[in-house]
Length: 144
Image 1 (cartoon, helix red, strand yellow):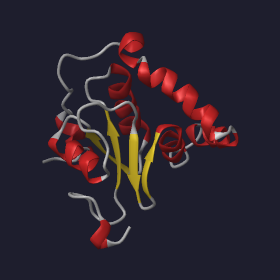
Image 2 (cartoon, rainbow, N blue to C red):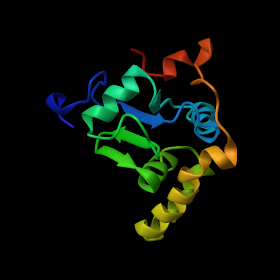
Image 3 (cartoon, rainbow, N blue to C red):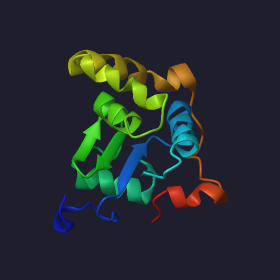
Image 4 (cartoon, one colour):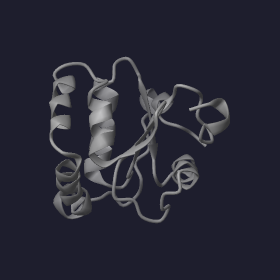
């Protein structure tokens, strides 16, 4: 992405993971990234935050419902299984080894991803409000 084509609030080279902040599975994924992304390659933003809403709108995605995690990186916007695999390949082992899942055709990967994403509240539950980062993890999140 060129400087002129950067989404609002992002610096060149910055990678942002957008996630559903009220979904317990998605919040768990954010905590997983904080724990395993020792190089701090990724920043986080909940889709409910003002920054998350601005990024969704900038990319032409719905801002009132969101059924996938998204990654914004130097190559643009990635959703569903592509986003997940692009993140995993940048994490240390053993997570990087899961990149072999790219050998599975995208329609099949996305079908599996969608089954979980569309039923995530039923399967894992939801928080009443969007979880806020703890003070020691605040710098990992985009802020308004």
